[in-house]
Length: 191
Image (cartoon, rainbow, N blue to C red; front, side):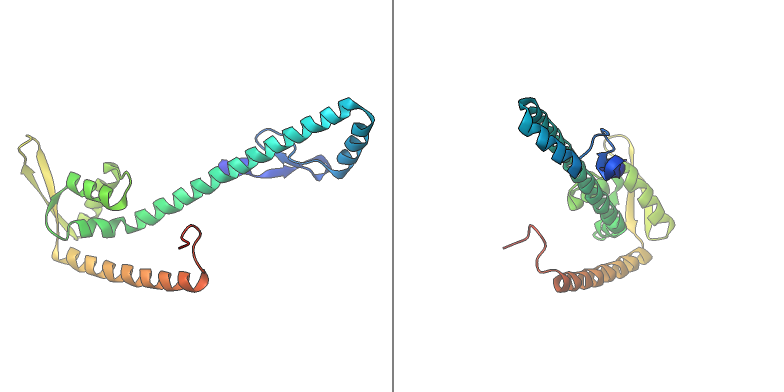
């Protein structure tokens, strides 16, 4: 929806029109010429021209603001997809040092990825990794009174973690080489 709002459509006289408000972003040359001639003849014409210019600048600012929101939204989507792709690796590595209960894994992921990771994302992933044969689980009573489900890596899970780490390192190296060769320096990272 934001993408549609950020676009403009062509209207009468081929002037761009805002989808959000239906008003024109700019004016055609004939309008400018007539308004300029009218403005030189009457004081009201100049006021009208200034009001139209102010309105135009407001719509251009709104358009730029919508584009900024779209860009931020697209970056957030890309960032989320990037983290989702690495989530299995992070879960397996969180269990590499030993057995952990589910909520502790969630907290590890939140610390590692620096943002809110929901339990609704992690528990289905833990179950899928268990179905793949990479994790095993067991229930244990806790001092708090309710049982906790503990997860640990299987031998195959440890092997898979090793393969995933090797792939991650190779991908990181190749991406680093590619980015270094194709970009001088990413914006915002100037030294």
